[in-house]
Amino acid sequence: MGKSAAQTIKDLSGQVVSFYGGDASKLWDSDKIEVIKGRLLGIYGVGEGISSMTLNILLREGKIKLDPPEYAKLDVKPDIHVQRVFYRTGLADKQEKGAAILAAREVHPRYPGKLDSPAWKIGQEYCFAECPNCQPCPLTGPCLRRY
Image (cartoon, rainbow, N blue to C red; front, side):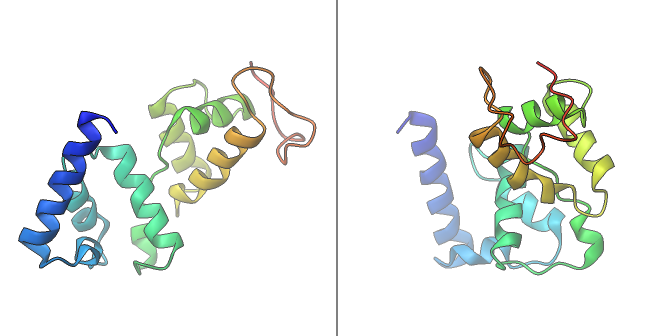
């Protein structure tokens, strides 16, 4: 484990004890994305991408409940896999973080983050940086196959 990861764990643990009485679930005990995201961003080493990924996982796992307008505030975590899939399929015009976020917001404005997990999975299982496995990919039909 790197020094940065250790610092994140130390900071998170300290906050859970100091601010939440030892109950980590109190970090996400709000129904407002801005509140939860603010808490997550207050942890050393947690940025926009990790906070978006965490929020999407919490929602998918049923740990947070949101009113429908809040879903629109959840972005994808634009890691290299999501960027690559969005670019190659033609959803994004560039293979970069900002382009992936904007593409997700355009394609699924009511809940952009819903595209995160499927795009990441496709990037991991089919859309490799080198020698992508296009034939069995579920997006093979509509994909532009930009390389």
